[in-house]
Image (cartoon, rainbow, N blue to C red; front, side):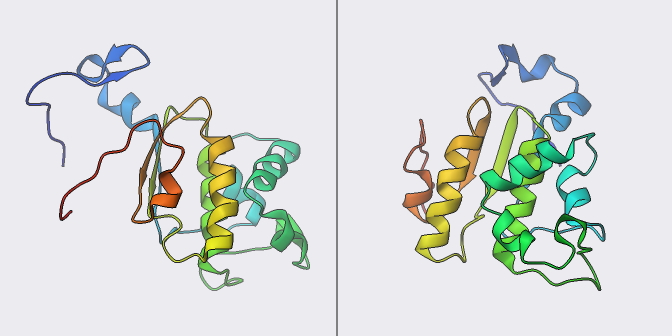
Amino acid sequence: MHFGLAFGEVPLDGENIKSLKLEWLRSQIRLVTQEPALLSLSIRDNIAYGRSATPDQIEEVAKTMHAPTFISSLEKGYETQVGRARLALTEEQKIKLSVARVVLSNTSILLLDEVTGGFDFEVEGAVQEALDILRLGQSTIIIARRLSLIRNADYIAVMEEG
C-alpha cells in the first residue's frame, strides 16, 4: 500500500521524493526485521545476494557485524549452506548476516525494525557498535523499544501508544 504526502515534503539526496520514480525509490531502501529470512544459499551468497562483491568485501562487512567468530566455527565457513532445511542459525546470527547484506547493498536508506529485540545487553552493545560504524553515509531509521539502541541517533521520534 502506498500513501501520498498530505503536506510538506520528504527530501532524499536533495530531491523531493514526489519527483522520484517509485521503483528507484524502493531500490534505495533496505529492511531488516527482527525475524530475518535467509535464502537457501551459502553464508557468502546470503551476504552478497544480488550484488557482485569480492570475498574481501563480504568478509569485511561480516567482520563489522562481529559475524566471523561464528562463521569460522562452522566446518565450511562462508560456504556453509543455510536457509530452509539447511544449517539452523540463531536469530542473532541471522540478524548479523541480514544487516551485513543490507549494508553491502549500499543503499540510501536503511530501515531496522527491532533488530536487537531479543538480544542480551552484551550482544546488543556489539550490534550497536557495528551499526554506528555502518550507518555512516546512510540515512537509518531504527524502530526500537530499547533506548540504548538509538542513543547515538540525530533525531528521535516517540510514538505514544504505538
